[in-house]
Structure formats: structure tokens, C-alpha cells
Length: 113
Length: 120
Image (cartoon, rainbow over all chains, first blue to last red; front, side, top):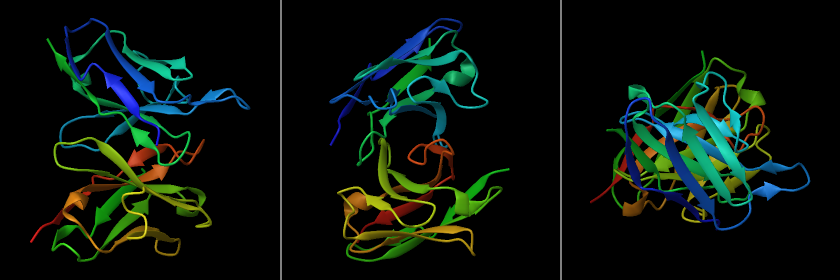
């Protein structure tokens, strides 16, 4: 199985500051025939289901604010929140869908400092 | 508006069975792949199962293979998860999720979840 490792496990960021979350996979998620990285990012707030933010590593889902961006390729990915808002406090998960079983990172909790 | 509503969760003894349902509305069910994802209390997300729009392809996590069966009924606009030989480690909130139109292995809409508790 592909192991997804996020870092840090938690971080506290001041309002308006940048938050950066890393996600590393145990093997490449780049499918070279279509040049796509099979990596998604989700946000989950307490008591709510996850919400899709980013897929194909860098494609923002419709309706997601542009302060959320995804980058990276092969086995090294990053989710950046450019200017943290109060409503961004949540747990963030990366997920690979390159090969079954699709696997998630352990989650990164973002808090407001 | 896309809606997914899970039901069928509850308390069951180890070795027992449950059938989860997910009623969908707001989109053409037959055109979308579907998924089940679970989350143990206080833990992270675990993908459980996938079914293609035609029901021609199904995948399972190793942890549930041979015990769980995913299915769908287009006439009922519903997704199902039959869970047999339940274990304590199956205790979780079970979410149904719609496959993204770009690629069905991505979940773009999620239900609110139904809690399954396996305990004697």
C-alpha cells in the first residue's frame, strides 16, 4: 500500500499569515502518460464530513477560495493557505488515488494562533 | 442541490451484520461512481470501497475484503454497503461519497455519515 505522511501533525498560524502543509507519498503519484499527479486535499471541520479542496495535486475544486493552493509532483506535495482566515481552522488530509487501496495521510490540524 | 443521506448505522455485536444505505438526490445517480469512506472515533479517514457507475467495477480495502459488499440501485437512487462478520475495529462513522465527474476515484460530495458501533 502507498503510505502518505503529512507534516506537521499540527500547526498554529496567526490570522492573515501563511500556512503550509507537506504530504509525502511512499511512491510516485505521477502517471507519466497523462502527466497528472493522483493526489487530493480535503478539509474537515469538527462534526462535519470532509470537503474536497484540491485534486490532481493543484486543481482547485469549484467554489474553493483561491487562498488555497496545491503544488508538488512525484512524491512530494504541499497545501498552502496564503492568508489564514478564522474559518480555515480544521484538519487537512491528503489522499492518493493512484492505486487501490486509496490512502490518506494522518491529517494535519490547523489552529489559529 | 447534491445531497447524500446515509442510514442503517447502529450498535451491533461482534460477528453481526449491518446494511448501510445512502440515498442520493440532486444529480443523476447513474452517471457517477460512488465510494464509502470511514472514520474511527477521533481518528483519520480510511477509504473502504468503490463502485463504478455501471456496477462493473468494485474495489475494497484489504481490511474489509470478503466481509463487505458494495452495491447500488439506480431505480432507488441508492448506494449500499452490506457489512458481515463485523469486528470491533469496524467501529466508525461511515460516509458515502460521490465520485468526481473528472475522475470517480476522487470524492467531491460527502454525506453526513452514519455511526456503526461494534461492541458486546
